Length: 509
Image (cartoon, rainbow, N blue to C red; front, side, top):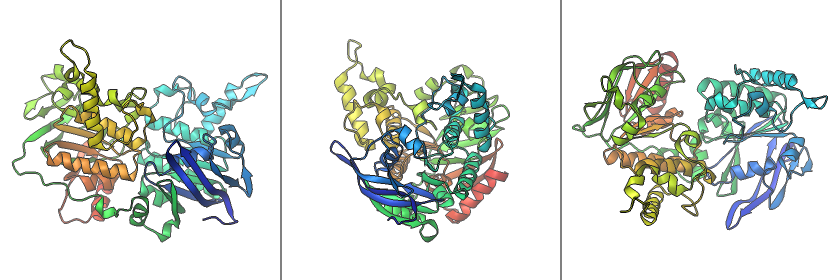
């Protein structure tokens, strides 16, 4: 759907990779001075379309019209000359360089034939201050956290003062305050006439920021709706063919005599966690909610042996793991006891991106795969890998494919496969659907319910409050390191009221 007033027109774009039709005659328009969301499941064609707009990929057919003129976007440099800047979901930065060098990579300032570092430093300060970020531009990028690196990537795009800004999952690594500042900047850019394409799996934030929403499904355009004239259930149905209410059926009930698998008793961890107690039973999905600095991160680190509590104790099936017996505090000990961790950043903490799927999926069970001579039994390795990939519905053409080449949803499934291979008793899921499309989310939700029904204990924390509420039997809310509220599913409170209660507790304690 396009018309003459469009600043950007996508006209019949098609793209094929071998036997896969990634895009088929996609056509819609984006008005000048609007925030236009593009949504769809993984594999819907969103990323392919954005790469074509950014000059990274070339379309097989169709054209791109900017400001009434057909644009030639044959390279990223050509796209930049056309006023397009993009922030990719997977960060495209240089860890060994400084923040300012990353912001100006490929378009460095020069004076007298030399790099004009003072000018780049000053411009980097301006770009970061616009985001409300206190990061020293001289800092080496590798010293920054994931969310800080995401902000550097966004600052780099904004520093080009683009006419068309493309943001692919820009808030996936940001906390609530950082996301709020980003949205304020996007609204300010919109008021100056900038055109913004916004891609996100978080439909709530899409409805909060976007003027219109276009949906892709299986490489085909499904339609464009004004945000105020549609709803999340309607968009979900356009994306997947399923209703929103089908996503969160009630989890299986926890048996009254279910044993306690994991327990924290008055655990403190410096100033970040204060005398926290919790119990996780077999078959239970226990949710945790809290803003950055609430102590939720520390709970996951303590339970997986990444940090030691300053006081209190952690017990596994009644046996104390921490306290006097701190020599056993380690991730290896946690794994030995059947505790698995799905971390917030799968690419940096959960996977070996250059390794094939096969090696990632079986890394924790190598001893089981050794033959009589101590050599790896390749046949057994392949068999175990195939069984895991089939169980988790990993979409790939080969178990030998590098895991870094998979979609975000399939990468996360490989992380889950790695842990399911050890037959865990407890899974710690730390934002398990970050950067994952709606379809893959539904599969992960189903897996959580199946695992709980089999007697696993699951501790879950998600950046999406609806996800935490929809999956969990109980939700614990932390504020400044202390437990301030507990909500139980089916207590008579409707989902909207439950969400409001959680948000209020998260922000005010």
